[in-house]
Length: 194
Image (cartoon, rainbow, N blue to C red; front, side, top):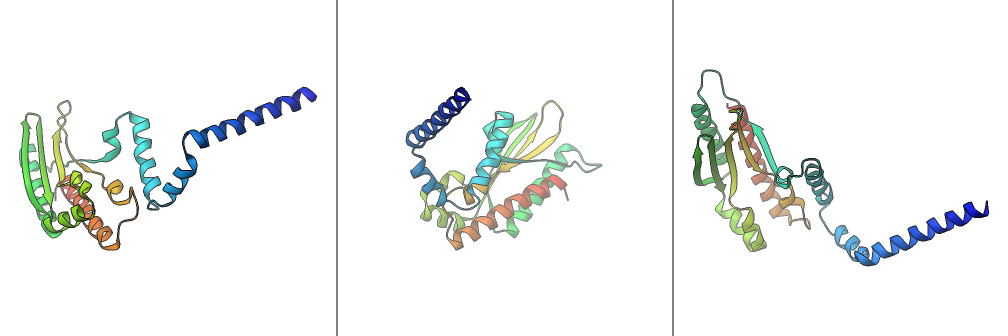
């Protein structure tokens, strides 16, 4: 019994020492205070991304939304892509987003990047923090899978931009959510093809 108590005491001491070491080594006191100041959705959004990274090993998959494009019956792939672009542009206009760039990177397999932005919203975000320029303009990629021939549309998941730090001021949050809604609606329109 003495041996068992001694063993438990040793294990307890190691655990306490380990926790104290981790607390000091990783400055957990400061980190806990910093995390408490973040937007309430920051940690859940980072964990969603991290779960995908752990599962796949691919950080891009954790930061990007993807949808398989529907090719309507009776349409060629090229016609379906042109239709999807037309639909995305219509949705973009509804949300006040203008087409600011269009690049066809490859024709076989098809790789195309379309960029959308609102000058007014963009200026407000850069005035708030010039680092937001890295998210501009919003992009949608159209990529044909060379193995299957399926066409996918991709866009950046905007949750971390919106909720990944301190809570944005009310107006900025509203504008960011409008842009996110627009980009996701464009992705949906391209996916559905109608």
